[in-house]
Image (tube, rainbow, N blue to C red; front, side, top):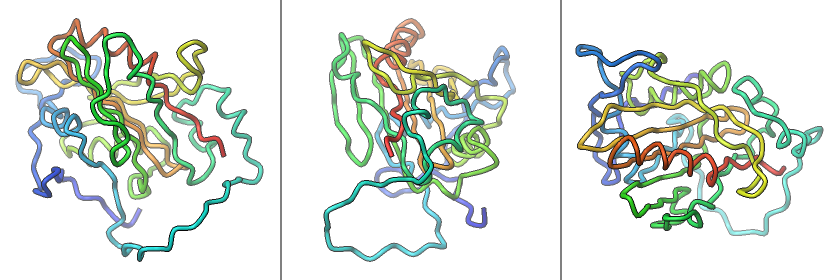
Length: 247
């Protein structure tokens, strides 16, 4: 990749910020002296700001006249077969080129949850009566982050948001791949980062870059304490499946 995305984070007000680092390495006990990544990242994600990554070498496209869209068909691509199988990182190339993955909105119907914002620039925010907040977002234009496979590309996304994040801080987890609450689908691998408690909040960020599809999905969960976070993560796994492309 020739174009390198900036490692600084630009907030909703357009001001570029350097994020403090507060995450613990995955699979190892926290100890003093090891940098923690993403203390500020959870707050930025929960604010619903954009994480679109654009290639700075490519000029903005001029406004176009609205027109009726036609279905996109990828020759030789079996969308139903892809949706019917687990999607580990290595299987990302089975997706249709350029067709983004989606995120369900069923969390708004889960017990105790309510929608706060819905599909604002690709992001939706949900709040639970116990104080938990979830932000789910799909972003396109992720080409500058694409590496050898989707796992490497997802590491690049985290490092784009905070350059101090090391791959060892990230854990491999799974979310639901398609299906519904009543009939769960398969599983899709994502990377998870659990920052140390910051401001009294317990937080986890789950994300994946789908290189072939040219998109990324992330879900951030912030709760008052580890107990409520554990319950919220179960709700996310059940009610916010990633949606396979249909084309």
